[in-house]
Image 1 (cartoon, each protein chain N blue to C red):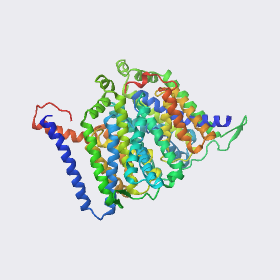
Image 2 (image 1 turned 45 degrees about the vertical axis):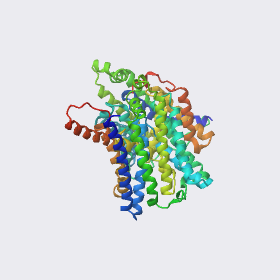
Image 3 (image 1 turned 90 degrees about the vertical axis):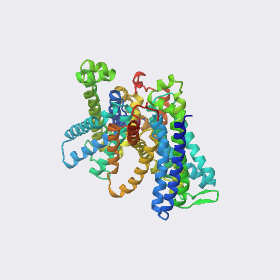
Image 4 (image 1 turned 180 degrees about the vertical axis):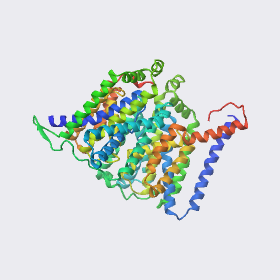
Amino acid sequence: MTWRSLRAGIGLELRMVVVLIGLLGLRFALAGGQYVMLLADESMIYVIVAVGLNIVLGYSGQISMAQAALAALGGYSAALLVMRLGWPWILAAPAGAALASVAGALLGLLTMRVRTHYLILITVAFSTVVLLFIVNWSALTGGPTGLYPIPPMELGGFIAQGPGDLFYVVAVLAVILVYATERLRRSRVGLAMFAIKSSEKGAQAAGINPAYYRVLAMSLGGLYAGVGGVLFAALIKFLGPESFSLTSSLFYIVIVVLGGMGSTAGVVIVGVVLTVTQQQLQNLADYWILIYGVLVMLVMAVAPGGLGGIINLGREIRSTRRRPFRAARPR
Amino acid sequence: MAQVVVSGLLFGMVYALVAMGFSLVYRMTRVLNFAAGDLLMLGGFIGFSLYVQLRWPFIAVILTSSLAVGLLMVIVDRLALAPAYRRSGVAATVSTIGLAFALQNGAQLFWGNLGLSFPTVFGNNPVPVFGVLIVPEMVALFLIGSIGIVILTLFMTRSRLGVAMRAVAGDPVMARLVGINVERTKSLSFFIAGALGGIAGVLLAPITLLTTTMGTALGIKGFVAALIGGLGNLPGAVVGGLLLGLLETLVGAYLDPSWTDGIVFAIVVVLLLLRPFGIFGEEGIEEGR
C-alpha cells in the first residue's frame, strides 16, 4: 500500500465521519422544525435509493426500472411484518431490505443469459406485478387507499416518533451506505463492474465473469432500495401504490443520470437538491417535470458525465496545473 | 371466442403502430425510445385541438397530426438525441426518458390536467357482422393503420430513401462510403416513428379517454410488442403488436381482468426467455450496443 492510496483511504473515512458529525449538527441546528426534518429525512432516503441504483446503472451499466418497486417490496414487507405478524422493527426492517435484495438478484438472474433490453422488460414487468399485488390484494396491503397506520420504528428502547427522531437512524444508515458504495467503486469488484460497462468482451478477456457481477449489482441495488423503502414506511407511516409507480423508478434514473452515472458525490448532491427543490417547486410551478425532462436531454447531449463529470473535470484541471506531467491515475 | 379474437386483433393495431416506430428507431440508432407512447398521446391531443376545436376534416387531422409529431421528433433528434447516441445508445435511451417527462408535462400545461374525450368519428355502436359485434371505430383504426403499414413497407422496400435506410441499418460505415447521408436517414427514422405515433394517437383518441399520462403504458406495450416480434424487425413488430392485443383481450376475457397486465407480462417474459430474439428476430441485431 503506497502512501497515496493510504491517504486516499483514510481521507474517505475521515470525510464520512465529518459528514456524519455535520448531519448531527444540522439536526440540532434545525431542532423543532418538523417540516424541515421531514424534508431532510426524505432527501437522505432518496439518496440511499439513488446511490443503490447508481451501482446498477452507473457502475455496471444496466438500465433497471424496478428501483421503486424494490423499495415498495422492502417497505411493504417490513411494515406488514410489524403490523400483521407483530414482529419487532429490529427484525422486520432487515428482513424487508433482505427481501428486496433477493428480489433484485432474482431479476438479475432471469436476465443473466440475455441482453440489456430484457432487463428493462423484466424490471418493468416486475414493477407492474408488484403494483398489481398492492392494488388488488387489498385485504393484506390496504389496496389503493394505502397501508396505515404503520407503527413508529422501535429499535431497542429507542422509539422514533417523529422525523426528528428518525433522523438519527436515517443519517447513520445513509452515511454508512454511501460510504459502502464509494468503497465498492474503488474496489476490485467495482472496477470489474465498470469494466463490464465499458466492454463486456474486454472484461471477459480479463477473466471477469459479467453475469456474476451484474447479478451482484442488481442485488446490491435491491438492498439499497429495500432499506430506502423501509425507512420511508417508518418516516411517513403510510404506504400507497402511487409512491412506487414506474414513474418514480424513472425519477431515480433521472437522479443518477443528472448526478453522473458512477459518481457518488454527484448522485448524492443531485439527490438532495432534486428532493428539496421538488418539494418547493411543486408549490411554485407546475412545469418542474418539464424542466427535469429537458435537463436530462441536455445533460445526455452536452455533458453525459452529469454533475460528477463536471466535478472530475475540475479536479483534473487542478491536478494537472500542480504537476503538469504526472501520468493520469485511476480514480 | 370469435368476438374476443376480433376485438383483440383490432386493438392490437395500436400496439403494432407503436412497435413499428420503436423497432425502426432501434434498428437505425440502437436507441430504445421510451417516449414512443407519449408520441401517441401528443398525436391524440393535437388531433383533439384540430378536430374538436378547429373542426377540421378527419383526414386532414390525421395527416397534420402525424406530420406535426414527426417534425417534432426530427427537431428533438437533431438537438438532443443525435449528440447522445453518437456516444452510446444507452445515453440516448436515458434521454428519451427525459423526453417522455417533458412531453407529458408540456401537454399537461397546454391541454390541462383533466382527461379529454374525443367525439366518435365513425360510430361507437357495435354492428353485428357474421355474428360478431364490431365497433366501426375499431375497424377504421385497423384499416387506416394497415394503410400506414403498407405505405411504410413500400417505402422501405421500393424507394431509394427506404433502401438507403436499410443500408444504414445493415452497415453504417459502408453506407456512408457509398454516399448515403447517414445522419439524415437516422433523423428520418425518428420522423417515421413520430408520424406513426401521430396517426395511432388520432385513431386511438375516439375509443379512449385522452390523458397526458396515457403514453407511459402505451410506450411499454409498444416496446413489449417490438420485443415479441424481434427488436428491429418491422413485420415482426406488426405481428407482435397484434399478438399482444390478442393476448390482452384473451386474458381479460377468460382470466382475471384486474391482473391482465401482470399475466400478459409473465407470458411475454417466459416467451422471451425461450426465444430471446423474439419470433422473427435475428441474433445479429442484438449485438453491437
